Amino acid sequence: MMGLGLLGTIIIGILAGFLAGKIFAGRGFGLIVNLIVGVVGALLGGWIFGLLGIAVNSTIGVLICAVIGAIVLLWIVSLFDRRV
Image (cartoon, rainbow, N blue to C red; front, side, top):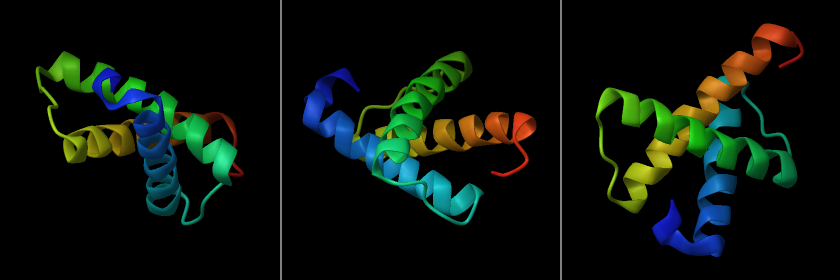
């Protein structure tokens, strides 16, 4: 995500958080929460993909990685909070 710059990271984070919210819980959480979930999810997804030895080199690949990470993050949160 470093090659995208700050604005690109924010856009990917918002989009990933929004998509993960739609996929996992069927709803979004608002712009700020989507950004946080998306960026943290991107970090988590990058870590997971790194463990699996999968390299992500394109913007679409980064988005997919971020969405998967955000879904995993939402799943972890749902283990502690049944409202999600």
